[in-house]
Length: 456
Image (cartoon, rainbow, N blue to C red; front, side, top):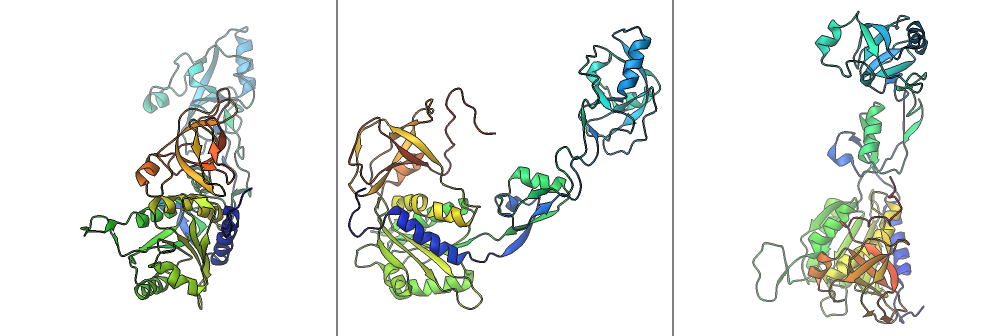
């Protein structure tokens, strides 16, 4: 592999970010979230949850129908000389939530889905297997107690012992672990915890992140712009990316090229928000007003180029947390919006996902380029692409370039669905070349090849 002199590889920079994040997340606060709270989804479990009892809690009915004894059905059929019609008197109704008495021999009992199967019953015959074919209402059902129910069209499978009965513990056994430390809470996992009776779950506190942008030219969206000024895209972009990655985010108003003002704003925010991660954009290149480099290089942050494009200038380090506070990981990104966005995906996502399961891991696909393109030798270039076809039988997806490689082309990035990765040895890349690509946030995973099914 060709390596440009003086540049760190992407893998080397990953390792440095990973070390900084490990130092900042060595201890994580724990808090509780209610299982019905909107903020519970995506949180990371901090304490194991076990089932105090079985699920289902009792043998219950899988169908609306009639609880019966298989032996009684066989006897009734024999009495009718093998007639297809089976008659059994109905002795009552079992709605869900009730505690039924045992079923007397030679009878049946109407039972609703989820209701407890009475002792003595060993199968449920669906109401569709009756002459009536359906329950018409609670009042009529109760009025029919004592009358014969006529079953028709019963097959050997219909009258098998255990048919349409969900046994206690079929789903979860008493004492079984239902949530493990490190799992990400999904709606299904929260539903399981609730079904087991847990009103809340202990979770790790979200990683606290602070976003700062540098540059006298920056103004907040909505503000009037004087000549030479631009709206700050990087702060909203970075904050949104970090929130998607599971962080609790604070945006600091520190858009300045003055070192003293930047240092004061940083220190004030460090004291006020106690972040575990600081992400800056801008002020780290080779210009005369590189305020982030000027302030943080004296605090142990290492700056230097990384062998990727866009997003070559980078910085990473750890700020001491002080008494009673955790250390702070610092990741410094270049100021062009596309460089910032690409760096978040290519440099920060993988190390962040390694220390915090709340951060979705990189989503990689194999991509076939439809156009020829070129890339600088020694750099890992990431080109914006859109998915142009469903995967072929090998799982490779055709992609088309969206715009050029320029780091200012934010509109092109917004229209892209993935970042095609050209290797350090790629210079002239022909159409049809297959490379790895990273799916961008918000892009659905491609459908599986024909003949295959997606994981369920």
